[in-house]
Image 1 (cartoon, rainbow, N blue to C red):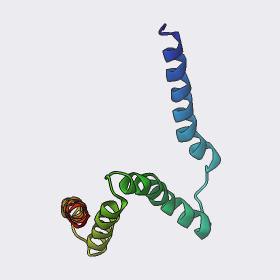
Image 2 (cartoon, rainbow, N blue to C red):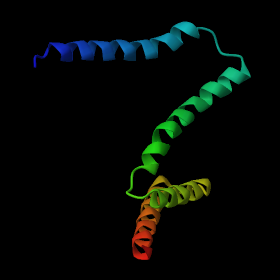
Image 3 (cartoon, rainbow, N blue to C red):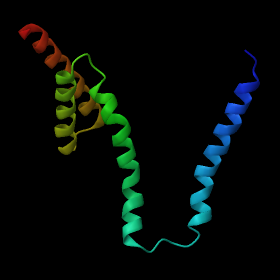
Length: 106
């Protein structure tokens, strides 16, 4: 295999990254006045982050039950405004305990 395709891949990735960062500056030159568009653009990062992480969370353990238990623990603690470390550790512990209980029952 030659290094030639790698350079093409890097150039394509650089072009796509540049376009993604450059287009909003070119399209939205004036201040955005529409409340709908402002609200839409405000929530896009949260929606994308959720769409990328939720499937990964649900398939991260060997059992869907333990993954859902960890997700529920994380959601409850995050709604109670706990710190990120507390939420992450509690979700891991909840998933681990649910997995142990599921193995013990079966």
